Image (cartoon, rainbow, N blue to C red; front, side):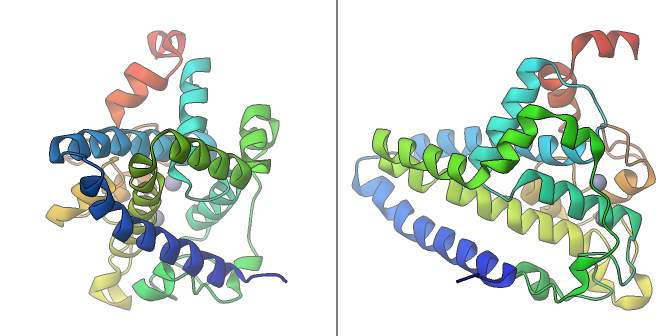
Length: 259
Ligand SMILES: [Zn+2]
Ligand SMILES: [Zn+2]
């Protein structure tokens, strides 16, 4: 039996919400402290950002050359976030840039409501206008993660659950929900979806909560559309908190010296 993409997304969201609802009381029931929970989530948010940089800035846009440590750290973080198969992310995302806010854009508020996007109700327009990034296909480690993505995500979660079940319940499920909600907020509000069809275009989001939710510089969405191959999203008076992570942790240092 083949499950449709929409139902797969609904299933993933529902399972993760359920795990988090169980996970929070279970954390305290098993003796976890509030401070421990905050420490866990701060670390998990860092992994969220590293995975987001990996999927978006590195694998989709090829906007910087990582060190071998940086590349592996991003691939592991992508698995720990459990968002979606990374080549699919890249293909969908490059189609968004190529056909921005037209009928061929796979997730534009011109065509879809926020809740259409959130629940994966994308219709049939996902079938045309795609480019497959060659740099991704040539990257053996990234292709390995793409080809074995769900096996890796499940293995990581089973292993973590065996080591510490309360941590497992509040790691990947929360990161998945955070990444999914953040991506949909950027795709909708980062294109002025809340202002109605006439004003739809990429914007640097002004909502105070946009920074908190995306936590990865993605709120500077207009800056990114203006310069998609730039590894940071700064400009127009906006800071990008993920810039230093790219420069000091992930990027190949020789390249930084040249730049
Ligand atoms: Zn966009
Ligand atoms: Zn992009």
